[in-house]
Structures are given as structure tokens and as C-alpha cells.
Length: 576
Ligand code: G16
Image (cartoon, rainbow, N blue to C red):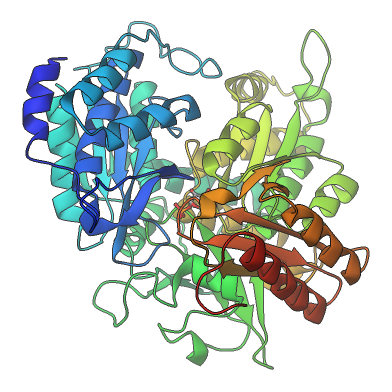
């Protein structure tokens, strides 16, 4: 890389200044940089270069998605995709931040030289790319953006940064975050990486799932699925997916709401984040006029999360969040594995595949209990953020991960896929027909689900196929377990970095005395009560979560803990 060329190009992207004349600082949060879109030009330019450097160091293509996902329309951000299709390794975050905040050419040069000197192979958990695979022009960067007004300008800046660092840029244009990840994932494996190839793969996986799990010729679901697209990038992509599904000869009765051409703005009282946090239907899109108990789904602005919900005759809305999706997928996977009998035992050690579910502190206590006690599966709790859940799920042969907010997927290790495929292909009639169908169904699931990151679109296909296999409606699904009432609130503080946490964010270490005060409040709400506070990594707020045996208990506990946070962490504005 010619650093001098990069530094010259960077002159066109000076960092913005604060009102006091100091340089504005940007922090790398839960999913990359995220703040008011109009301030991000320099950060995006420099992140474009960082993606190119990461590509150069790993010898494989990397990616960038310009999105602020669930945030309001005026925000924007950058998600950086590592060469294997996952998130940028956390070990690079500090350098990404140093590059974004460098105040001189020398500082930028120092960071770039440090990174370029690394000789870092792709993450060790992933197999190397197929032998002989031509990596193409390295450095190579895939670039996608969502529908925000600041998107085109920022995408130009990212492209300029990557090019100034010597990269070839593959501009995917308006696209979802999961498609950005999949393009990189597929490129790493030498597989077709276009949007068309991706939706074809999902559609074929879905059709095979219906075929293997159904017991009649046309197992396509018929109950309409009303999807709130949050006025984001997902709507147009759903249309492509539906077409790809129809080309396989099956159908999926999706009706799209809150998309381009309908009133409303991005994520504004619509979308997965709103529905999950408020536990009510989207305000726009006509959801109040749907028939009672209609099957509804909300996705977010970049289509990487989904939640289901229905509103009954009494206008009570029931949310089926990421925890319920995890329980559904885990139940299905565990059922299929049981049907495979001993065929999937390790040929040498005779051990079964190691299966687990990864959650965060936000997972409803009832869901964790269900997975551990009813499904008898292992669970693991990580801090918030796909960047933590995804690698934890990769440590299992089959790892299902979902955040309560609807981010997640199911990962099958290469060993697991190889074993399933080998057994299915070499059964010679020796396997019971039902075991063979279960094996084929597992293989179909690996195709219908995004293997690189959670995808709301593939999430809908997988949920629908499982519900269809079980002949379940949303009410049946909901009875898997009863959620403990929970409440999430945001507290504004002067500087949220004063709060530091431990134990997968379930306990605060600072400010001093705050955790003891939270514990004292929790102890007043009975045995089932639980609460925690953590600084958000995507919004300038502190998030408070509380659950308790009753709705009133959860609401009051959330309020009490918010007051504690406000007092100890320098609350601003009106006290809770
Ligand atoms: C991002 C991350 C998620 C995380 C969410 C909220 O989602 O990808 O893993 O759960 O932020 O994070 P926080 O609580 O730190 O604000 P998205 O959909 O906004 O990209």
C-alpha cells in the first residue's frame, strides 16, 4: 500500500470539529462506528482504508456496510466485515478507532504501518479457502449501504478510502447487512456471491426443508405473513427472495408493509427494535386493521433482525422475540438430531455432535430455563453484540444464537456439515427412512439460513418451515414457555463510558456503589427478579433491563434501577 497516496486522498475528508474547535472523536461500539450521519465522512473514508488493509493482511476480500441499522434515519454507521464473513475481529477495534481519530498524517501512518506489518491468517476457526482458489485482486472490498439519506455520500467516502488504500471495490449498492456478510463469506469459499445466488440458495434450502419435513405434496404455508419492513432496505430484497422461492415451485405468502412508497420514515415507531422494546405493533403500516391473531413480523432498517408478533381479539399483543426464535430453532435441530439416531456419532470417539445455544443477559430467564431443562441443551451467555455471540456459537458443532432483539442464526461447523452429508450420501439403504429425511432436513437448514450473520429474510424462511413442519401457528409456538414479564428502558447520562461491566454485562464494576444499589433494588422484587444496566454501543444511552414475576414488578424494578443509574452515572434531563 502506498501510504503517501492514501494520506493525500485523506485531505479531502477532514475530520469534523466540535464547537470548541477540538476534533470530534468517534468510538467503535457494539457493531462498528455509529452516530449522526453527517459527521461520519472522515470516519467512513478511513474505515474504507481499514477494510482494504484487513483484506491485504488476510489475503482475502473483506467488506463494509454503511448502515445504522435500528437507529433513527439521521444516524448512520459502518459495519466492517471480516474475510470469513463475520465481524471485524475485536482485536482490531482499537486500531480502527485510532485511525478514525488520528489528528495528523503521522498518527494515521503509524496505525496503518502497524496493521500492514501484521501477518494474520484468517480466523483459526475457519478452514482455509479451498486449495488453488484464486483470491482475485487483493485487496478487495465489498461495499453495501442501506436507504438512509446520508448513505450515497458515505458510500462514496468508503469507496474513496478503500481505493486510496489500493483496493478493488465491488459496489453492491443498496443492500442488506446480511447480504454484505454473505458476499464476503461466499467469496472466501469460492462460492457464488451475488445477491441472486444468495436468494436462490435460501429459496432452495427452504423448498427442501418443506419437502423433507412435510407429509404431503404441496407443503407451502398458506396463512399470510404480514411483514413490517421498517421503511428500510429489506422490502425490495424480500420481493427478490419471494420470486426466488416461487421459482422453486413452492410459495411463501408474504405481504410487505412499511416499504418504499408508503408513508412513514425509517425505524420511526416501526421495525423490530420498536416492536420488541415497546412490546406493541408498529404504529404505521395498517397493523391495527389486520384480522385478530394475524401472523406478523417486524424487521429492522438493514434487515438483520426479526421478531414475530400477533394481536388477539382483546387487542393484546404477544411478542415472539429472538429468544422464542432460538427456542424454536433449537427444538427443531435437537428433534432432527434425535431422529438421526447414532448415525452422526463421531466415527472414532463415538461422541455426538456438540450442540449449544448462545444468548446474552437480555435473554428471558424462562427461555434459558427451557433450553437447559426441557431441551437439555447447553447455553452460553456472552456480552451484547453479534461479534461476541457468533464466535461463541462457532465453538459448537451446531451453535444456535439469537439475541432477544432478534439478531441471530444457526451455525453448523464444517465437521458437522461434512458428517451429515457423508452419512446422508452413503446410507446404502441401511438407515431408517426417517433418519435419512432428518439428515436431509439438517442439510436443507444449513442452506436456508445465513451462515455468516443473522438475516431477517432467511430467518422468516426458517421459522416458517419449522412452523409448517410442526403444523404450528404462533399461539402453539408461544406455548413453548411463558416469558417472565420484562421491561427495557433507556437512561440518558452525561458520559455513558463511566459505566463498566463484567460477567457478560450482568454486573457493573463502576461507578462505585452502583451495583450494590441495583442489587438492593432487585432483592425487593422476589426470587424471579433480575436487572442490569449497561452502556449501549449503538446509541448514546444506558440500557436498563428488568424482569420479575409480574408485569407491575418488572415495570417498577426497571424504574427503580433507572433511578439508580441516573443518580450514580450522572443522569441528564428529567429524572426517571
Ligand atoms: C447492533 C448489534 C447487535 C446489538 C444491537 C444493540 O444491532 O449488531 O448485536 O444487540 O446493536 O446494541 P446496543 O445495546 O449496544 O446498543 P443493530 O441491529 O443495531 O445493528
